[in-house]
Each structure stands twice: as structure tokens, then as C-alpha cells.
Image: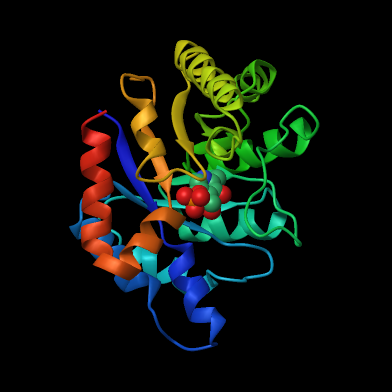
Length: 239
Ligand code: PXP
């Protein structure tokens, strides 16, 4: 059965929108765990636009499930990860001007720097996932450079503008999940998933965990964090 990792970045986004000290992403993480989250995810960006260093330090102390740190493969972030020791690091591409992560990390173009980051993290006993597009060559390269897991970028599927595009995108996700699983890689998936699109994954048993943020935090505004997480966790259990 697949798990649910809840990304609380957008709780921090709301806090930063007013430069206030609330809402508190740490409290959101506790409520997410009470609602059935199997892990808590935060992306510490170079520009610190939402999650701050203090959040990651506090989360390391209070998260009872597992703490997943999304980050770019930079020296600064590698140093922070080595100190915090999250349960998993997910390496993502990062552009200053993007609203959110826009696509998978191109591990073919950046194989040397990504391989170095993987070695550094694994030497500190931190397993590493790489966020990549559902593409055979990217998966092969992720395996070659010894990633522990991949996270399949589901954004292309979630943003598809026609049924045909959506079907093609989903086909790629299925092929990628099966290929990565066959190579012995762990398989996570995420980006853009919501309470409707998650249902498409019924029967795709190769996915270990879904990483979901925006749709859950958006629903939490209406029904509360614990209830929003519980609803998504239940949908995932039914897959
Ligand atoms: N996975 C990765 C690698 C991401 O960068 C994000 C967005 O922060 C997510 C999953 C979650 O995406 P969403 O907020 O659209 O659910």
C-alpha cells in the first residue's frame, strides 16, 4: 500500500505573505501526522521564500514519522542536510523565478554534480531520491549514479489539457514506475496531485509514496489540516 508524504511549504507561504509568525508549519506537520501522514516534506529553497532554516531544525525535532527535505544539489544545502540528517533528501531543480518546481531534475545533463551530491549524502547515511520526469533515460541514469529512489514528476499528467495528453502522460508514469521498480529503485510520485487526480493511480502498486502539498493545504483552509490529510490518506489507501 502506498503512503502519503504531506508537504507543508504552503503553510509557510501564508506566514511569509504577511511577514507574520503564523500560521506555524510545525503545528501543521503535527496535525498532518495526526491525520495519517506517513511523512512530512519541506523544500528549503535558496531564497528562503517559504520554509526557513528554523522550520527545518524544529521539524527534525518534532516529526514522528519521517522528515523529507527537498533541496537543490548545492554545497550550502548539502551542508545543511548533513547537519539536520533528514530521513530522506529529494534532490530537485531550482530556479529563482519559478512559482514552484517546474520539472524534473535533468540527471543526464547534471550527472556529475548530482552524483557528487548523492555520494556526499549517502556517506552521511542519508538516503537520496531524485525528482525526475517520467523518462526511461533519466531513470537509467538515476540508477547508474546510485540514487536510492526516484520521485516521478506527475505535473505533466496533472496539467494535461486534453484527454489524449493526459492518457499519454499517465502511460509514461506507469512505464516509468514499473521500470524504476524493476531496477530496484524506490518509487515516489508527486506534483500537482489533488483529490480527483489521485484516483487515476488505482492498481499501480509500484508507487511507494505520494508527495502532496498544495491541494491538501488548500483543502485544510476549508476543513482543517487533520481532516484534509485524513481524506487524502483514505483515498490513497483505496488505490
Ligand atoms: N514533489 C516535489 C519534488 C515538489 O517540488 C513539490 C512541490 O513543492 C511536490 C512534490 C508537491 O507538489 P504539490 O504542492 O503540487 O502537491
